[in-house]
Image (cartoon, rainbow, N blue to C red; front, side, top):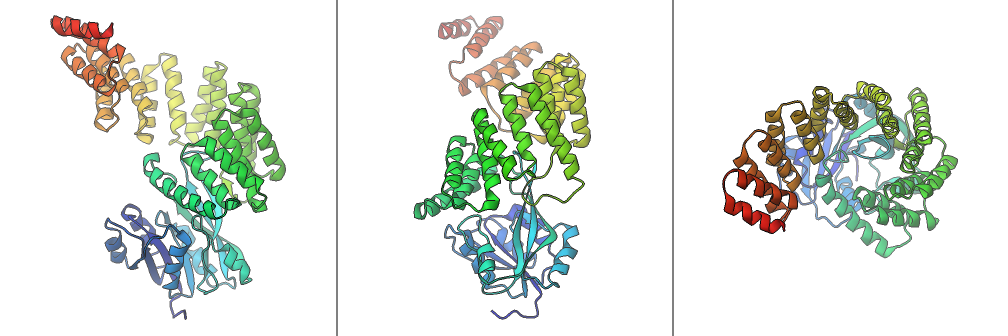
Length: 485
């Protein structure tokens, strides 16, 4: 390919990315001379949207191979430089000048800092570096069916690679777990195919562990991480992270002592990995060694504050002091120190008003102290942040009832049930609220729906017997009592 007068081509591969694509493409408007999009089978409005935003779109058959699809897009790039962007990423305004400066430099490729918002982990922003900006050279191509990189090809051609200050924002790990699952299962399928051909592919085993951990199958994740470390082919820079991730999966399984041994090894391999302290604190908390757990978490906070004064991390989670303060609060709550826990949680939510766990614990502390009016706003805020968390509807409804606002409690439960969170527990709670409001027929309806969800639920059966008796339906009351027996 002979590059034309085009300076920068942005390349993408997409499938059903209508929800994300506008932000991605609009972030490179006026920056890219050309946008090339390989569509691997969209059935929504992705193609039309991309074209309306100035992209050249072509169809490409999906072959369970991300590198192959990305290389197809590279083959059509006409610019001197290529920036590869995922559909769930975007270029923040502050990185635009950095991109223009980089492509005027003498390097062949640049490391770009990818910042991923996540829902779980030892922090909420994961940072890693990838060579996403590189010269449009036929010797540079992607390798790897999943978690594909150009690193190997850059090394083969002796490319000059430099680190840049360019940041890409990645939102793909911050979505609802139900939406995330199909992507994870797709990656799992590809990784299993790769490992059928080479069972000792250490990097693929590492990514298998990551995928399984995100799917919540921690036993299998432990096995994958252990295999990735045991085969002896894992790049040295990945070993501390793989060891830490193995420890994290073990903590999820309650294997705290083993996790702590691994975390000590992490600290030997790379003392700069701060999240090892946070995980050590979690393991100690699991062992009910509360004082030591708090000390470890406070050590993390102290080192994290120092780290904020220095360079940003190259790989791993950014320091998350508010989340660490929540763990300190949990240690204090476990010791029964409600007021000390409340003080540290106030500090945490002052630093991050969107800290759902902080609001949940503050709500529970207020409820425990029978300060129901103060509990309500914390649970309301937590629900705004976690609208699919069923337990929060219970806690908010319970707080409303305790505060004497039975109508608001009923509205809260109706909102949950209307939003698709129909469960026997929520329906029985709604029944209790309606009984309290003297709406006995409405309570019957709620308990009958609860029985449809959980047949022969003894609590629902007894309540229905009592409600029908109160309403004068003695036959129905007797029937429910018979079933109870």
